[in-house]
Length: 114
Image (cartoon, rainbow, N blue to C red; front, side):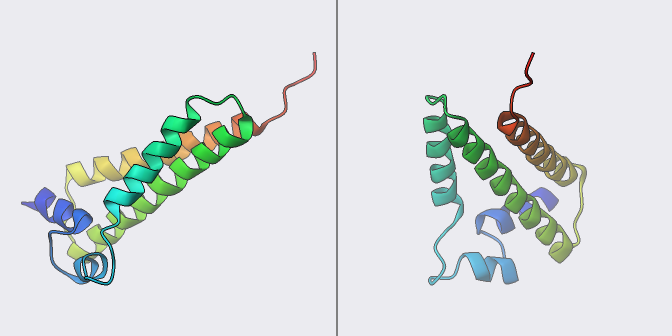
């Protein structure tokens, strides 16, 4: 039951202020376009060797997972329902943010002179 509330509030089939914000006729459904855009960016970054494009891709990924972490945290604060699954979801997204930012800085570093 708890996970269905979190899933519903994240994907627009629940109730509450978040549901009203993201699923009103004025506001488009945001998960599908954002996931499509991110996936296209990631796919195109696979075929490049330029550091700038790779860094922007990592930064995009970090921002996306950061926003998702904020959404999960806001949903947990609003509903007050905390389970092991939601905590694992939040921890995994924060781990993805940390790894993306780490690689972002590693790709941008200048190589050491020998």
